[in-house]
Amino acid sequence: MLKNVTHSGGVEDVGEVLFTTPFGYMLPDAAASEECLLPVGERTMDALIALGDAMGEASTPPDPSLDSQIPAAFTYLGQFIDHDVTARTDREHGLSRISQADGRPRPFLPVPPQDVAAGLKNGRRPQLDLDSLYGDGPALVAGADTEASALYDAATGKLILQQLGAGLVDLPRNGRTALIGDGRNDENINVSQLHAAFAAFHNKIVDLVGGAPSAVEKYSKARQIVRWTYQYIVAHDYLPRVCDAAVVNEVVRNGPYFFGPGTGGEELFMPIEFSVAGFRFGHSMIRPSYKLGTGAPVNIESILGVSHERAPADDLLEEVGGQWRLKAANLIHWGNFLEFPATTAPQRARKIDPLISKGLFDLPFESASGPAAMIRHLAQRNLCRGYLLSVPTGQAVAGAMGIVPLLENDLFDGEPPAVQDAIELGRFQRRTPLWYYVLREAKVQKAGESLGAVGSRVVAETLIGFLKHDPNSFINNRYHARVTGAGIKVPGRFQPVGSLADMIDYVGLQK
Image (tube, rainbow, N blue to C red):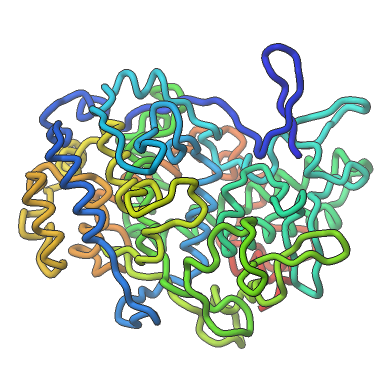
């Protein structure tokens, strides 16, 4: 297990490495204005519950007409990024708790924004620095220790992995539980295998990095190259796929307009509008089923909760020689998720729109049970957390950014009648939950192929703002990072690594 030093001087075992950094609002004036927030009252809660339920889409097998052009891996790269930069707004404790012990909605009023900013703390550093992968690193001084030291082979500076065959890896496990810096990266097979791929990327760089005589120096140099490559992939492979490319290019060239840290104006913080609403657009990209390796596709609900024990035939893990690991059928072949030369077309992410795969409406790894367990219902809890944490409405964010908001009919035309009923019940026609607004805007403006104007601006400004603000990012170290027009130069490869597919190819993982 990982370790944590308590304030009393003791040491306790923990499941992940957490940090403490601030949350804030990208648009604080909107968050502080009553007319820019959802109406307060039981009617709003009832409408949010109804809207969440109306957003379900039950196509199994997947309906090809709902596919986007985005390869399926980018759904889970988005989840990996989210876990790298933010934590605690998805946790059922403290300010972000929305349910009772039995899972039913907890009666609450929205928390005033000044109290949210003061009392809610981020468990990640708001930088694209892979703290979810590296934690606080290995011990760099002989005889010392770190919280994350159990993640590393001290003799080599490599991250511990299970090698299960040529091009097949799994996370290290303490019993059934993944031994990683962020336990959420084992909550489904797809993000679990992506986390393992990044660990394998680090290990290959350690093997090939030059000019580093000690394991500590190899680790340090490898981590720097991996971080720069990851950041390049986020800025130049991920964001142009999920956001409007013109918005991404503008923010890369000229910096954020609205996110203060990007302009050097404020302390670095995680924007609530991004964490609680804008970046949760990825939930709509989740397919109802996936083909992992060479076997038949499996439903999304069957690949959730990797470490949880279930009937032997359905268990995602197996015990071999006293060590738990993913079954061979559950090891990803990346040609099913990404585009490579000489491979068949990969599965595609679902379009970005207000429809959510119904397999996500009864999440198996949440502790609450029963038909009233709202906390297991992904859409309902997204909407209720946005209300609880005083996220400005979609129209308010659009107005603050100088973007003409969607018309009332644009919010529900063509959606199931229950969506319109919920919007009318909550009086959301002009004060729409930001998460729903971002999804609907993507459908209206971009036919679901990417985020629209508001969503692109919130997401791109946040992630690129982190890079602009970080003096150690590749953007601020282009010479030392050996940035080319196609990626980051890495040892042992003539071509730079500039995409997720390049990274998977470089590591030699199964396609």
